[in-house]
Image (cartoon, rainbow, N blue to C red; front, side, top):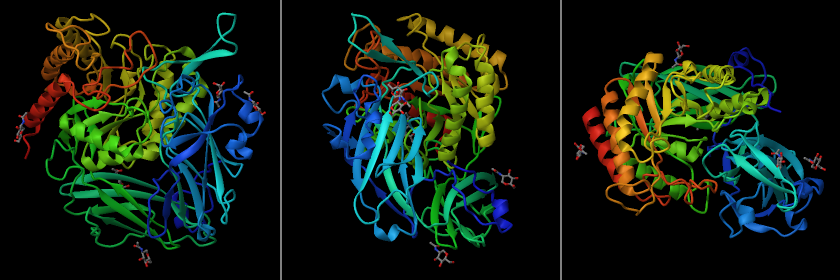
Length: 627
Ligand SMILES: *[C@@H]1O[C@H](CO)[C@@H](O)[C@H](O)[C@H]1NC(C)=O
Ligand SMILES: *[C@@H]1O[C@H](CO)[C@@H](O)[C@H](O)[C@H]1NC(C)=O
Ligand SMILES: *[C@@H]1O[C@H](CO)[C@@H](O)[C@H](O)[C@H]1NC(C)=O
Ligand SMILES: *[C@@H]1O[C@H](CO)[C@@H](O)[C@H](O)[C@H]1NC(C)=O
Ligand SMILES: *[C@@H]1O[C@H](CO)[C@@H](O)[C@H](O)[C@H]1NC(C)=O
């Protein structure tokens, strides 16, 4: 349904704009825009029919959901899995249905009314008053559509959303269904197999917004920056959407500092160009500049026909060399954590206290970066990373691409679409210094080579300004994909999944490993994207024993010694697995979830949290001599 927007050059030649465009700007209030949230407690019903398809056969969207059967209250945003004491719902596979009511102010009638879901996991179909308005394939990324022709401007509106959490060979993440017949299983029995080590939380995970813009509107803003002495150069491209009749609208652009002062000397009227910010305040990670990290400017776009949109951005550069990661031309060392968007009850549902707490604990740990393992995090979380000066490696939901059937043409095409949506959403964020196209694929398989060559090339075309990586579990000797990336990211578990309990082998193995990567790819720096050991908080044993707090600290200390050796060479960072404990599927290796957190799932430190904090603060002090 989305046609291409006209390129700015055509607009300047005087062509009218009348297309549906592909921007995914975050809905923000302005002089011309109003944003309203539809969050709250909605009606909910799962389709437990054997075929999981009764709901479609009986058109549950065509009348109030309660007319189809019993509904239950369900919070939006949240995962539906852990709210009720109901194992069948927690582990449900198939379609669930959500419904709410809303009103549209009658004075929105002549404007453009847009419905936007921040994320619905995994596949979603949306109806307004029984009319289908959009579908979206994939969790974790926003989708929106104009709904003027479906909404009622005088009277209530019924919003129905059907969400299907099924993971198949061609979804991201991939998975499969197993059907079990015979007398030993209940009738019509099937289970979801996942290829990732975290719970497949599902539902409407982020805000549902209804917003209004003028008929001609700012559809997209792209900002790239460079540094010239004390000045910042800000390249911008604006795309407009909507129909303006015969003459193109005028556009006025200005840059405001954090206090709202206009810093461009004169307004600019082109849809694409460069503005210079004199004596700019650059965006820095918080550990590299103690005062004013995360400095954000605003690009204000004012369209003569009435739309005003404000896009935040930071002025910074990022570059991967053969042995360093440079931010504003200074070497950056990632003191990091890999995370999950996961916590009790709400599952992966957006939660402001959790976001705030996570940043408090990231900073308490002394961490200056995180990876969005293993899917894009909420826009609200990413805003905090921008504003608090925390560096982000932005990862796609491509986790566990393991089997030959996950490398087909349909998977490839979907993977590229997901990268397009991810770059589209996060391209203006200074915190994002690198794209991670996948986590732990079978990068040793022959199919992986052409597949990832294509995904990475595609991502590079979308954004030539940021380095690209993926996290590999394979060895330098059998990996086929690292050749295409800028930074080598490796996940390692010496002393855990191999040589379990033997911390004494860690340094030798890790050191040998790093050298073998360096020998094969001496033009790329290395980042440790995972290392960690499961630990039950409060379990102690001296001398250390696996699963105890003592083992986790002994284990990490060995890794740290090797990191310190290579830190001065080509190692550009370390990320512990994991920031906090998180939920997984039931399995004999998981004691109510993955316990590799240095924090508990409630975000309280284990002994390893204290160890990491002492290390990160010390390394930050000796590396950046806080000036
Ligand atoms: C589900 O039902 C709809 C409506 O009857 C039908 O079009 C569709 O093919 C069915 N899907 C499956 C997988 O049976
Ligand atoms: C929805 O769920 C059913 C049951 O798991 C599955 O067979 C079907 O493929 C899913 N459809 C989509 C579009 O995800
Ligand atoms: C900004 O635009 C100029 C002129 O088109 C170009 O040379 C430069 O590479 C651009 N810089 C960035 C960071 O995109
Ligand atoms: C947008 O431009 C119009 C016309 O120049 C002006 O009247 C208005 O104040 C501007 N709005 C903002 C928010 O700058
Ligand atoms: C780091 O430096 C700060 C300020 O100089 C100091 O207060 C702090 O104690 C140092 N921390 C460590 C762990 O050395």
